[in-house]
Length: 379
Image (tube, rainbow, N blue to C red; front, side, top):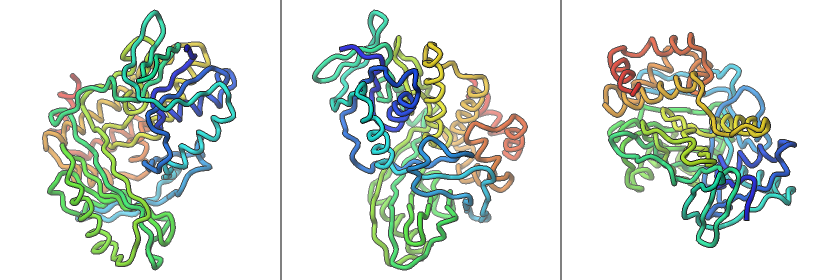
């Protein structure tokens, strides 16, 4: 059976694209098939991001902060985010929101099946599953079929274990989030704790590392327990939910258009910020551009703007610095937060800064290691 669009994968990028298409009058009646092996009924993800204005998913924002803390050995800084708000969305809320909206459209079909291949033939794209073959004018792919090889030579992994905890007594200030606490041991690589309170008795506490490989699960658990007890000074709490994730921070280049009429989206298309792991808001920008192109009758394949190529170069340069151990992540982020306003940092990390703001941030870093890494990253 042939469709206008097939969305391969119903994660953040696939469902964000579906929602945006269905909100667009000229596209909302297109025949759409969404294929995933899972039904997305679990709260398997938490996405955090920042933006200046209310976004498409404002109604399901679980918590938000206008003030964040950064902590390192000799620096404890509470920063006002200026025009930005830092927001959290839980995976299950996002899935349910898009599924509920999509139910209004009879032209949208959800299929639970395992994809075995994605190909193109005779100017149409094909998705082959265990049970059938489906074709479309365009396939939007968020699976890992076309991902580059990730190894210890070209990539770090951002890996994390997070606990949503509930305390007996009110201990958190829900108006202040702890973005990075580098005061913990760095023996396993760039390591920090992340604490985002959603009320005086609830918070996400996450142990996060940038390193070549993951740790044993008991190590994450031990470090979370230690931090909650010794730093947060909490003795009585329950774990309401936990999650574990791995995000590639890679020098490898992710293809946007691996085959004719096949468009990679999300992490598969290179829309995870390589230097930080942030994904949600970059997906929204990518999805917006795809839909704008479709509205105009143009190909949804995007040519990276010069500015976005520059940002990707910045990302590769930082990854190169960390991979070659010219500086630690703790040193890099401490310099960044010590010398700059939160507004400029968030604009820089969100690919929204001006060249003058870029220079203002980069001038504070040691020139030699970043110059060498920058030249290598031009290849």
